Length: 106
Image 1 (spheres, one colour):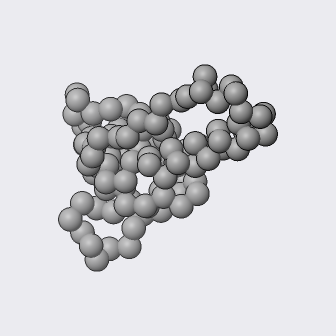
Image 2 (tube, rainbow, N blue to C red):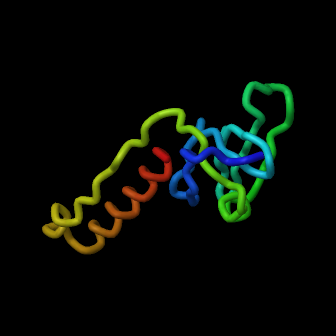
């Protein structure tokens, strides 16, 4: 299988639910994330068990590419300058929650 020219050669930060990807000579649909595991199914096949693979194994594969994106990604802008007036402990907590929100969104 050849990867289309417009496919994105990408890392983990570019994967999102609903993405169609190329991996191991096949097209897959990203259906779930669980810690470092990514659940993949064949597009259109709702009866087969998903392929569960570790994210670093998937994204470091030579033929891995994001072929299409289901929906545009939401951007959460970093607002460090707005947090300077907060106490350091509270600022760390806000940054921790920002990472969690970004993980949920992406």
